[in-house]
Image 1 (spheres, rainbow, N blue to C red):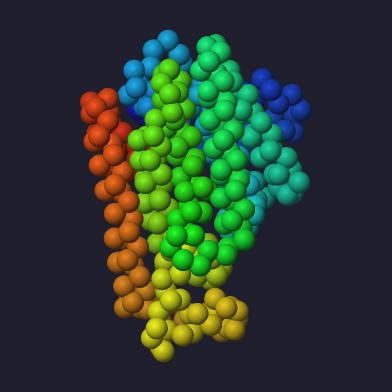
Image 2: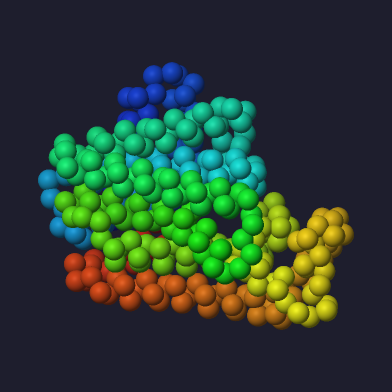
Amino acid sequence: MNDCIPLIGQHMRLLVQRFFTAEPLARYAEQFIADKLEETIRFGQLTVIHYRMFGGKGEDPIKAAAAVELFILASDILDDLQDQDVPSKPWMKVPMPIAIHVASSLLTLSQQAMLSSTSNHEIRLALTEMMNAQLLKAANGQMLDIMNEMNDEESYLDVVKQKSATLLQLACMAGVILAGRPWNETVAEYALEIGVSAQIQNDLRDLLRWDEKSDFLQRKCTLLTLYLIEGEAEEDRWIKEYFEGRLTSEEIAMKRELFLETCERTGTILYGSVMSRMHYNCFEELVDSIQEISPWKAEFLHIINSKNA
């Protein structure tokens, strides 16, 4: 599947060159795409492999994959602008009105790209309806994430399924629908499961860091921070006090080692690992239930599990 990566990136650039006639818009968009291509285009690969797994013939899945990746890039830009926690990104180094405009333009371009991915009217309509539905779900999830008002496991999982897992559904289902198949509930379900698993892994990583992306320092509600602040031990009360704003960042700045020790002692790290694995196992069970996937399973799992696929 690695052979499709350069082709997806190339098509993303071709779309920008074709539709972004304003030189500054094209220039910034190409800069942002270049940064994206240095990391991962796993979502586009998922589109291509699902097209192949479900017997797609006669269409070019690279075009749909490029549309998905443009959508993901736009979502990433908007997410970073809202969170303000990755200053190294190129879209964080330009004036915010420019970054917002490029992101919104990329969203529109992604829809145009999806429309152009097939000449089959019925498939085109199904792809567009699916893409818009997923965009709206992700918008709702992002708003709930910004509000940061999750207070239990159920509300956390609801946000993750709407915000993060929805994008995996988009990537997988674009390939399924482009292959001429209808919406597949099992694919949708396993996309949600792997999305939740991956998000918990990300939360575990961001829990243990001590910089601008630290979920703890940013008082971000995740499955793991909620688990921490629900602890009953008197010695851990300072964590809840910090989340409630009764302690300042300056007061806890020197507590990194204590915080890491608390995460270990309370079982928070183990809890996160177990929950992530539980959802991953559900994903694998669902994958095994679809006969078409069997010949492709190893390659599919490689895309899912690779950090730089």
